[in-house]
Amino acid sequence: MSEQISLKLAVPNNQQAALQRSVLLRNAVSRQQHQLVSIYYDTNRLTLRKQEITLRLRRSANSWMQMVKRQSQSHVGLTRRPIWDGPYLNRFDFTGIDDRRLREELETMASRSLLSALFETNLRRTVWRVEPAPGVAILVMLDRGWLASNGRRSAISELELNLISGGVDALYDLADQLGARISLTPEMLSKAERGYRLFLNTQTKPVKAGPVVIDSDATPLTAFRQIAMDCLGHMHANHPGAVDTPDPEYIHQMRVATRRLRAAMRMFAPVMPEEFAAKLTPLLRELMSVLGRARDLDVLMADIIAPVAAALPDEPRIADLSSVITDRLYHARAEAVTALKQPQYGQLLRLAAALLHRPPFIGPRLGADDEPSLQTFAHRRLKRLLNKVLELASLARIEDPPTLHELRIGIKRLRYAIEFFGPMLHGRSTTALVNRLAGLQERLGHLNDLASAGTLLMICAGNHPSLREAVTLIGGWHGQHHADLLLELPARVAKLKSLRLPDLRK
Image (cartoon, rainbow, N blue to C red; front, top):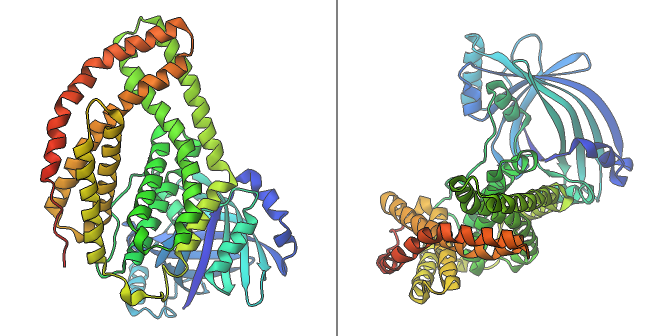
């Protein structure tokens, strides 16, 4: 058995040539090309996939190789996994697998003829061996080709950096040099997983944030690392949809992911190295800004304009204003897509992942003995966020929209924190509290959208008289809903005084 440490990166098809012209690759120690055909096997019930096991046969030249992989760790493109490989001589041979349970399970599947081919890849692989520093050797592999299953095909264009010698930092340093002028983003899905999705004809859809699995015995920094990796994964899982489809939910989910990451950075600030926030915050702000412009116009169209246009279908002033805003929305979306295709987006993800793979997030830490337990830390930070919400609630005034906006932000940060620490909190009371906070946050969000809409609508209307009249019509149509929200708000805000944090599990 050997362990493979690799960093996988997606390469846009139109930037493959530019990548190969890189000075680093032109000065490589060696360069080879191979035509590779790989066939992936599993049972009809996809037993291996469920266990994160890959079984593959690969043909190179005139020989076949058998390989078994276990996906043990994968964080934003960086993968560590044990591999068992050997020649394939017309039948599966699992005797070389030193994991007895896995070996016996695979042998049983083979003896019962349960294994069958599900999908295959056909690709040209160019391999460079680079030695960028003393003691460092990396195989750079560019794969170009396709994946096929059940008559369907999907293109492959990815770069894999395999560490031969040296530290993980060397992979990120090399990726940064190769990605300085082209877009190299982490490839979150292995070829095997993409093959399974092609086999099942899985349709892509926006990915929402799920529960973060953290160990209650972990240190605060280790917990932050798990949360941050989850946020980066959430962000990048929606990147292809944001770039390739018009569905606005992908951009919205990317924006949510950046907000969750920044909320986690604030919450863990007392134990975090200053370098992390100092390097990432400007890049995150820039990304949030471009995503926010598109999202704000999406909300304006969907929640403010569309209901009025549906209620007043024969009103030309509403239609004209809607057309102006639609043009702005298309421009904002195009701006967001352009930004997501730039090298800077990949640099942001690689920088964050590289920092999270260095001390003090992994390995020994100075002063670690003085670090509070995760339970103690979580209690302190949750209590602080709750007190902040109570303070903002006492300052909130319905006639002062900025105070309501601040309260909404405070509630959102508390809700994110509770969700992050969910595994450490008792279930029912936690769910009830999150739902309660989410409900009030949603109402405050509607108020904020309505308050912001007037300014944005007037900017879109400019000095055109009929468009300004349309703004007045829209304001009047939403007026009752706005009044109803304001009327019920004081009682809901007053109930925040009774908020209690769930007990932490010991």
